[in-house]
Image 1 (spheres, rainbow over the protein chains, first blue to last red):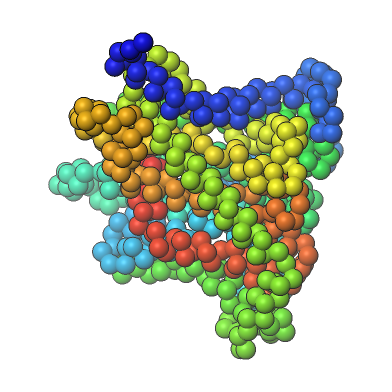
Image 2: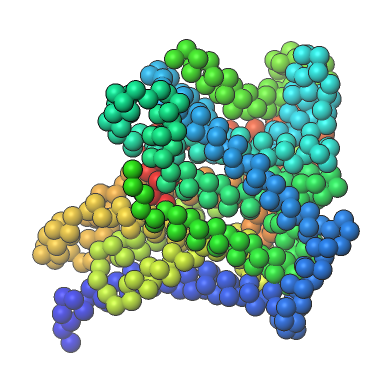
Length: 301
Length: 268
């Protein structure tokens, strides 16, 4: 049987797609559905299946939330704190550095690389380096503080300071990425706008608020959503910067994902852990939908 | 202008000094850690000798290298093949398939690790050498890569592909020998990111690799801390061993990496 050119194309297309289609169905779609399924079950790793318990896991999470010294409540509120502290800091520093980089002519490549280096290194190594910098007595930061006559700080050993200290490391680690995206965004703004603003007598401050920021709006939305999601998923740093990886001291640094890991893979409460991930999924989904809506809105200048 | 240089230099110091401090600490004997000095007074490679001989760092290097390489080769092949097909072919179901792949981007990995784990246990992917497969399988094809490659194949003119068709080259050959060479820069960026991402991956390998011999470098490093608590010179040696290869990769491919980030970041 002779196939037409068009039919041959269809056959080739499906041959090319075959392996990947199987992959996406088996390794992505099926586990997504399975995650929902497990969240409705009393599932222990060692026995396949586990009885269907309906919303029980979700009810348990809700009840645990209001218990005294609740790990789940700490996890949720800490995660919110990481986002609220981390995202604005990241954005402000990133934009500031990108604008400074836009002003200079020499060594641009060097500075860009310097800011970007932490981004390619592993969170675990970064966590250890900062544990060492934050160390109570011999740590470099406390040595510097003492050299200026300031009292040494406990940083990750203190329930009050640990979360901001870890947030600072997270910001430090991903700053380079933010800078590069802002730089690219700034370069896309045509010089004509700046010239026009200058001719109209605008000062630097006015140009920043009236020209640069509005024109950067899509980049700002994109980056803040991306950063929000990455702070919502905090795990590697917290696990490696708290004692025994438990999100301490006193649960002051634990996150939703760390609780997922502890419930699922230390306590083997797979159903409960899966329910936590489903909640995380919906939060991230809502944020992404928000991003798509804002970005698809036409902005007139 | 001068102010900009001063501020940027201060910032750059904050970015670089931690790495410098890590390397310097790794070169110090334990006794020098208490008496504070920036440079090691008697620099020594003893820490490296100890860490490399008493820990499984060699094995972890091999594991990370193996996993990052397998995943990158696979991603380079499948992501570009699928991206090409979704860009250059017309066939029923095309849009549904593309949306079905894109939709997976909405699902965070954290939600998949529990199902992946139960699946792996069921299929024996958590035992013995199968752990390699267990670690690597979620990342052998990526939706982001498909999305990027699909966009980059836009730049390949259809006339060129048709000309190759006239000459009697089969479709696989057209993709491999005509289209692929034209998207090399994009492919290189994808490969570098994928390699770095897999080299640094932590949560999933931590869960699936149950035997020390199958740890990847970050997982091994994480457990290594427990073994040498507060022996900072050893921990910093481990951190240096995990970091330095990536710094070298970064210095070599700096331009591609930063260009790739700017290119892909703005489109994503």
